[in-house]
Length: 262
Image 1 (tube, helix red, strand yellow):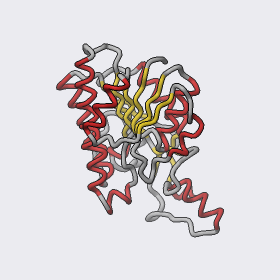
Image 2 (tube, one colour):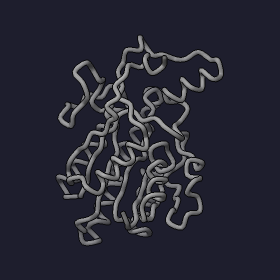
Image 3 (tube, one colour):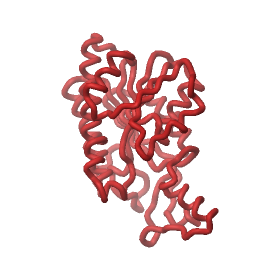
Image 4 (cartoon, helix red, strand yellow):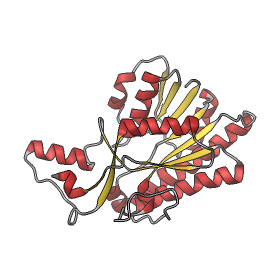
């Protein structure tokens, strides 16, 4: 994989895993874009700090002039859009931030990408990969894994904002022809994950002798996906996926929350 890739949210948990993988295993130049909120940390990028193929830009994807500058300055061959507010409980307490980053930020990025793509003569190999979540489908019941045909049924401001972003990406592809793809992933775990997520919370509380939180009866089912496996899937979709398609990415590891805690 060559060329230049713009990775939004690249200082976050999944985004930084993408950046580290690209630097370690490809020849691509990587532009990491992150506004460094509570979930994005420069420490996640320490393994690639100072690498000649890596550039960091502290910017907000909802800042249209800043985003347009990034496209002009770096002339990317593709975009991996991972910038998002992603914590369900935080979305309930403060939904406005989720709408701004996940919906408005996606629209700003799409419009900047479309303008840039037009100016470049609409190259066939340009790609816009929007990385989303399976929470747009609602709860995973007894019928098995979600499919790409599962109807959307978001149940929180977070999942609703991601569903809205997904629809915007589809609209920009269908209306303007932007060569975009979408992935919807299940719950990730692995190195550099934010400590407020379930598995880090369980481990840290157990080590510290603190109570381990279990929401409700603990019978909600989640599919678990190791973050490095997710990264490999994203890069395969980016390079081999069919433009306009949606791809679900999961680990085929469905477990009740109570089983994970135990």
